[in-house]
Length: 232
Image 1 (cartoon, rainbow, N blue to C red):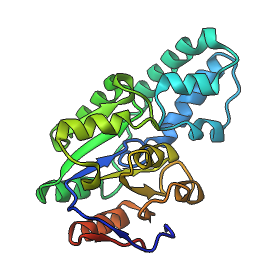
Image 2: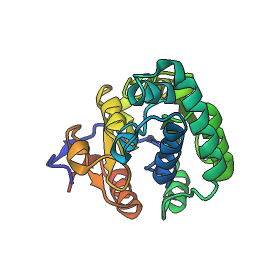
Image 3: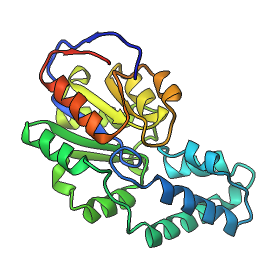
Image 4: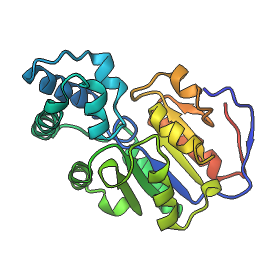
C-alpha cells in the first residue's frame, strides 16, 4: 500500500479514468506472447521483462524502445504483433470483479473513462468484445493523441467531460498511468495485479495500491462516501 497517510479532497469525485490492459482486462500475457512472436519473426531478441516494461505505451513508442537497432523493420514488426494479437486474444477477459465494479460505479452516477496505450482500432475491438461501449462516457487511445505519460490524453478526457482534475481519479497498473496523472496533480490509484511492481508504483505517490479488483472496488466505494481520501 501507499505510504501516504492522508490526502484531503476538496470536491466530490465525478470521474474515474481506467487504464485498460492489466487494469480492467486480463491481457498482459497475450501482449507479451505476441510481442515475442513478432520479434522472433524478425530475429530480434526480446525478454519477458523487456516486453512487460513497455505495456501501457503507444505502439509506435513501443517499437522505438524495443527495436531501436532496426528502425526500418519497426512498422513490419508492429503489424506482425497486431496480427498475432488479434488472432490469439479471443480468450482475454475482464479481471474477476471488473463487470461488477463498473456497473456499481455507473449506477452511482459516476462518469467513467478509458485512457489506454492501445490503438483506436484495438480499443474498439475489445470494447465490442466485452459489450462495454455504453459503459464508458469517453475513451482515449494512444493512436489519436500523445502516448502516456504525456498528460494530453487525460486533459482531453477532462475537457470533453467538463470535469475538474480535482474531481477525477486515474486507476492504472503502470508507472506511465500514475505519472500521467501526477503530471496534472490528479488523484491516482495503482493496482499491483498488472505489470509494474508495487515499488515502482509507489514512486508516483498513489492514494493506495490495490492488490485485486475487489480491493479496488472497496477503496473507491470509500472514496465516494467521504470527502477525505485515506491511504491504508
